Image 1 (cartoon, rainbow, N blue to C red):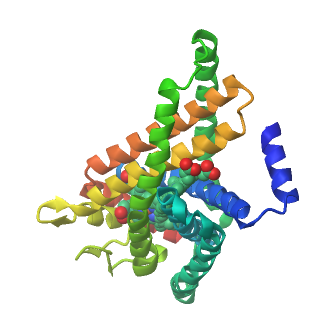
Image 2: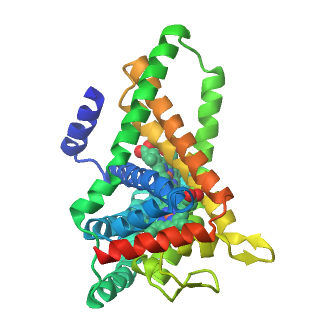
Length: 333
Ligand code: HEM
Ligand code: HEM
């Protein structure tokens, strides 16, 4: 924690060049996306396991506080992707390093240029919703619906601390370069390669859901379902996911495969990134550092398991019925 306080004060004090601010922005944007991803994968799995909860989660996404968060999330993804591409490119071509500062400015300009039309389109969807008399879930209600996540994260934190207490006491401290540094070299390359592959996947996901469909039209009865030739008859969020995941092209459930690739890459990349950040600030204590590593491993394993199981399951008509009733109940409130 002392090192975290030191990083913050030094970042503010040191009037560093653009490189330092790129590093700060890359870190903050990466953390923002990891936090969202944690809520998002758990929420999405409810479409299969607890249809009623999924309806409530999507209704919460449509509340004003999440609408503001959605703009922030898109900004984080765009900046992190462009800056991550710059890092990957420059690390692969060290001869480019002399253009480092200019490239960092190009990333900022590129982010602004991409965000202007994106925000205009997203704002159009928001305006349509409110002009048509849409009644979003209240802010307090939306926050209360997400509160179990606090308990989940606390439970993961306690498990990580206990595991670390046991292993730090029992296992000898590993010194030396051998295995550890080989593993770290793997992760270094993985972050760059996975980052570049994630770019088209995550941008494709956001373009489909935000720009073409619009978050409010996930739950519009009679609206077409993006990426399919189907209609969301009931207007429930669960039917939207079912139509996408059951849509076959040449016998292949293309959106399940797509989400599988997205899930595997963003969770592994995001939680390894989170490990970099958390261990940076706990270097001084072997016990705390190990606890942070366990926390990241637990988080990644939970999300990969829950998200993967959801993708392997079917969403049957009874789940859609339950969701349709829940949607009607929410609308009647
Ligand atoms: C969109 C494409 C993406 C690209 C091109 C990309 C690229 C990168 C790169 C090159 C790094 C630096 C790794 C290192 O220092 O060794 C990084 C770090 C990181 N990424 Fe990504 N990434 C992308 C998406 C994501 C997503 C979706 C998440 C969240 C789920 C994420 C979370 C993180 C975090 C938390 C870090 C650690 C930041 C730090 O150490 O300061 N990234 N990313
Ligand atoms: C507010 C923004 C977002 C909304 C409304 C949204 C919406 C959705 C929806 C409706 C699904 C269900 C399946 C489908 O239609 O393909 C889904 C799945 C998924 N999304 Fe997003 N998405 C958002 C942002 C993101 C971002 C930024 C990421 C990556 C960092 C992401 C990663 C995923 C993954 C991994 C799945 C599969 C989850 C699982 O296996 O259970 N989403 N998303």
